[in-house]
Length: 297
Image (cartoon, rainbow, N blue to C red; front, side):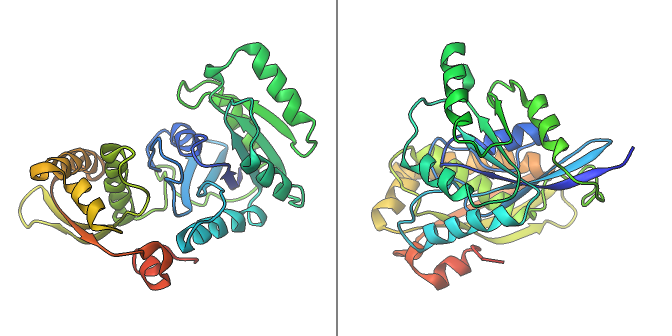
């Protein structure tokens, strides 16, 4: 049997479940999850491998109307992938309402010649009758080769999704080792884990004007211990106070939750030191965006 391999771009509005789906498919957490939109910033490659195929997923930032230079970077990262892959997966949620964001993405896909599969996520939240109506509505658009309903959270219909995706992969080589699930370096994964905990702990109090810069990752000689120091950048003094919290409690909670997950990632004990600094309006400054790891290449 010939081996099949290829690249899949997963696109969609913010918060429809792209990262949750990719994590569920590859079986490990490679992209952070938050109930806040625009969580994913860089294109994250996740790898699914089995005995007959290898699928490399590119989890793009949620497509949206940019409000700053960081937003422009995120939209460019999302759009660039469409002509570079073997399959485009557009993900929508089970909402019966199709907003301007969905219409914008669908309109942009009409000029894309790459095969397109529509995935309707969160089907556990609607009835069968509503799902049938939703499938009919998207089928009338006339640009999708297949429509697959799933629930990433409940792991419902994920096997069918994988089987469909594999059908569109060309014959090709194995790009990554079988045990590799992402090409992201540890430094990036650690910074993303910390950023996820900040988003979760601060709820709606802090917008997305935060970034995490890992200053040091160093194994301590003769001990099963890794020292990690990181700086959390925010845009305002008021945001700094919220992240730190009264008597430093919130920052301690963020650090504890991040440390526990980083220890699982690295397989060793971790000493995590966090600092919070203000870098005003960094999302609108090209140099700041580049220095914090958001690059076009």
